[in-house]
Length: 282
Image (cartoon, rainbow, N blue to C red; front, top):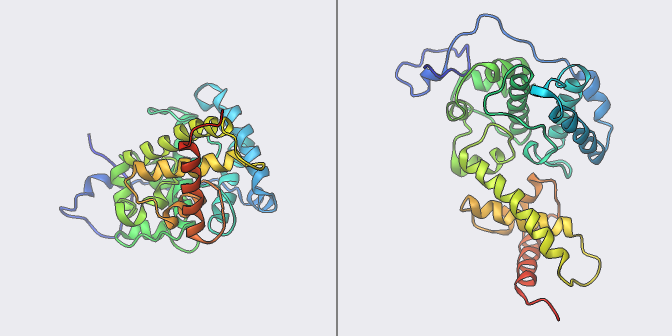
């Protein structure tokens, strides 16, 4: 079965390995007009938007086949994610994969399929806000233009295709230069990225329990400490060196900020690891 992805590239691809991932779609879909809701949400605090997303997640997860993903729920979900994407790099704000997000299935139908398509658009917009600019294929360059072309992103997202082919077309397949950006995505990511995200969430739970059981001076923020330690686990899952810079970038993907000096992140991390390795006082 042919693997399809984006449409309307300017040139034929001949023997290009991604040609099997490209087709023509006659009727170009239109992305939701969420401009009014987005403008409202730009005035909201990040914490308030995340709380709103928690409620949306619950509503969608409780509905069969994500049937709640329509009308105002759909509009607000999209606008919340776009509003947070716009803040990436400017203020403390988690990437899409680290926000409250509805569950998605491997074989989506109906509203589930619509939700999966929107998730990929949110990922692309997030990468654009992080400064990613495709250079290989004309169609993907148009999506990531100025302004971001949501209609073309929807066309790309809703056309059937395997994730590796779509990552290649979007220039998101480079392991060395784009992994930390791609690591913030909900859908457009590799199997290794998915495993690293899972490592973060799994290890965060265990670190939080261990930190709460330790006698640490002062009034520590166990949530923040567990986040920093779990970022280390996420980076190690990708075989990334635990440098201060990588720890800082990882923390910013999950919405944590411990200052602007990479060395501070490395110092905090090492101190917490040492604390957990020490025997608990009798």
